[in-house]
Amino acid sequence: MEKTSGTGRKAVIRQMAEVLWENPPAHSPGANSKMLVRPENCGSRLVDYRISNYQPMSFVESHAHKVQEQIYHVLEGEGVMELDGERKVVRRDDVIFIPPGVQHAIHNTGKGDLLFLVITTPPEDE
Image (cartoon, rainbow, N blue to C red; front, side, top):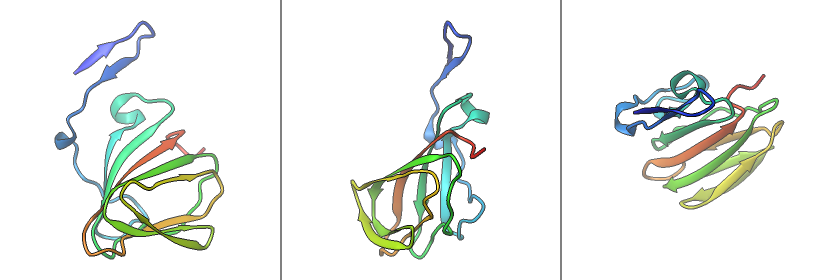
């Protein structure tokens, strides 16, 4: 469903079940995300909003962003968040803020899936 605002931009309602899981670059097999709000699928200008599900032993390689800020919100499971070389266990309801320039990675070290939201602004790291 889409609704046009006074600015000519459209509001969008997406059914999460209709969005396919993707395995983004630099993510191990089993580290998948649904790109729920992005410029190419909703016309967002300021935000990338996704849900990620990492199976046990899955991870994203350590990396840093030039200009992007990120928030990770753990919904289920447990893992290890690495921030500039320091590792800390993260679990359900933990929220992690990552400013630009901070090397980071997340690993599922638990027995079940690690489910979390990732909010990134701006959507592209340019």
